[in-house]
Length: 166
Image 1 (cartoon, rainbow, N blue to C red):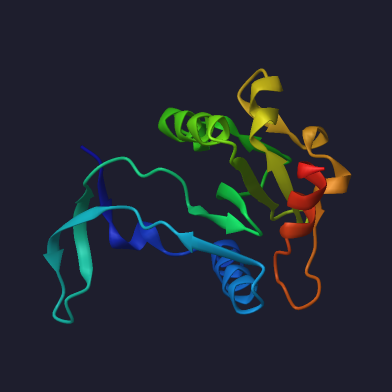
Image 2 (cartoon, helix red, strand yellow):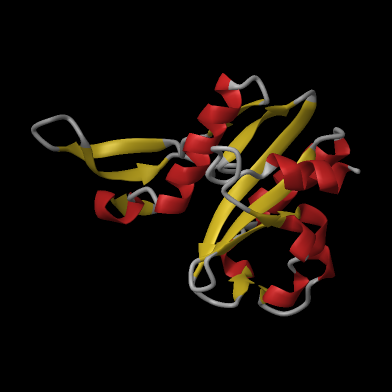
């Protein structure tokens, strides 16, 4: 059974940017996307009732699920300091969930932030099947799916999603 120490579960800046974007999308009526929390059973709390130790109750699916202008979407936000996306960060149960989601006519993808390059990309789920080896190399990320901070949206991925769906 997996365990965690609360110091290891700090939210990343990238995920916070995605959360803020999703809230802005909701306010503008463009999408309704929720962050899916990882189910944790607390075993120790501090004096302010914050979890400081616990275990993962079950495997989580993906980071986000929702609907964008009538299209069901699910995605995971990944961040890497390399010039590739390590596949060890994508788990079998996540791949299975995405496969099932796509079979139900939903769109499944990753948002990948290359910290060292200062670039963020939309990566369609299907690209994983085209990769051999232990990572998705940077050159597999299409420039047309480069995500920018635009129109007040920090991680404006809906434009890339629209390109992908066309």
